[in-house]
Length: 148
Image 1 (tube, one colour):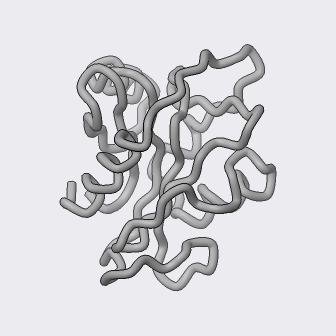
Image 2: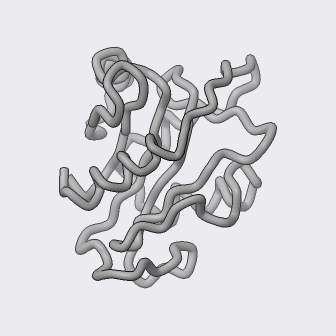
């Protein structure tokens, strides 16, 4: 994983984590994290459905945007609570420009509240080849496509 993506994930962790359990009618993002899509097609429906806040909670220098799940939404990925959704695609107006050089490759994904080992097992069982990166040991893990 590129250092800039790691900075995004570390920043998300430092913003503080509000744990809440997923409710029965949670919106699962498993299918979208099959890495057969692109950042626009992943983020746009979540914005349209107001599942994530329209204003990014963080915009990294490399233009990776991190969005907080909207109040009252219950997003999950592979059975885990989603703490944040992130993405970047060059020349896409959904993503706000950061202060530095934009990332050279597109990326999208989520940060979930679970250990990397348990997330990795669930993601592989589901047949996804998404990358898994520990953000905070035993606490926050990123699941992402692109930008590997």
